[in-house]
Length: 582
Image (cartoon, rainbow, N blue to C red; front, side):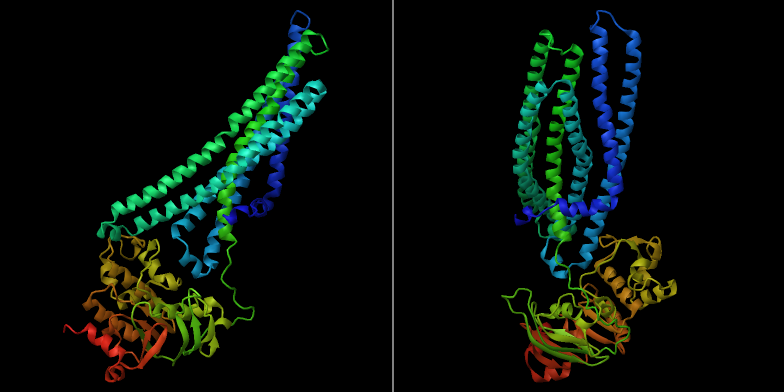
């Protein structure tokens, strides 16, 4: 809840500033609209006096008044239209800029932030919360400024008609502001809780729909529904409280304003009857002004409610935008264009949680073109080492070098472009198969794409699809099997053919026969390239030049398959346990 107290208006104004000319224009149109609106009651009051003042209607005097009144109404309508046009343009441009910055921020955040926050909550901030900002700004910009101008404008006109009655209005009306302020102060925290609850629900729905097969396979539907009901009830409870308190604003302020209007009417009528120089036309104009004076207080109270919701959502969005970014590349960072493939890891320490040690004093030296397999029990730090090699995370201490160059001295993009990765978890973007394969090499021609697909043994099933390489797929494309998706990911790497490869359980979703074919393709692809292979099926890494056996963040054994089997240690036991049934 500490974030609730952070300022919202200041960062929001940074996004409004580029459109300050439109903002000023909108305010000019608002002033014209208010002036024309406030001029109308004067004309109506004059017309009333012409009708009732002399006992007969002065039609000649009414005609110019009616023409002026029509012009005032037309000018009000036109200026309000132009003001709304400017306001809408400002709002949608500001919201577009905020959403662009939020999305771009995601690419600059460290992987630790993405790993430690529910993805549904992040999605909710970028989409739903920014929509809430849009709704609040659309209502707020126009009505807030117009309301303030109306209040000061009507006050001037009322003072010009009758000072004493005007002072009564001025003294009583601010009571509605105190009521609105008291209620608004207590609704901000509720709207913030509502945004948080909405993010939690979005996260749950995203998890359940994105992993529906797992949910169904484990019969978790009923538990998921119960969990959803908990979040849904929480959102409903907080939402009802927020709406209840915010909805009190309007009736409370209307009650105060009703008292003001009634008081003015009674006092004004007495003044007319007593002949104190206060005409029926003056009373008519004054009552209209009194109503126009109190009306903005009601509108502003409604605007405050919308703004509280918008500010609560804006706080969550700005929390994301203001998050600490991944450390930038050093100003003297080297752009890697060519590497020999050697990797040196010297005394590296790393842990996700400082209290829980993971990688300690890790040393590894890989020669150019060497195939290094990393094996060990689950949680021993295999994937963590890959994260450190790719600099998804920075080591707490120690140093990692590529071709004798410390990776912290290289630009991240150039260093990562030296690697080709095939992970256990496949990812395909929503695009054609051709574009998915070309993901790492956008300028590749069709012949290169087809050659890569054939090398990965996915050309056959691609040609059987309705539109072949032009078939649009996505990560959730249901007609592709998990193995076929992984073959496409392998083809993607085979097309770019970087000097270094990382294969993290790259064939885990492929049948044994296809795996043998892919292994031959990998063997060909890995020739002359430094490769890191993580595999649980130890039969797939027998041909590796060097096998690193890890346990609890340390290297406990190292050597070729034959050397480790001869040693009869941890690797030998691990290997034999997999083939004990054969």
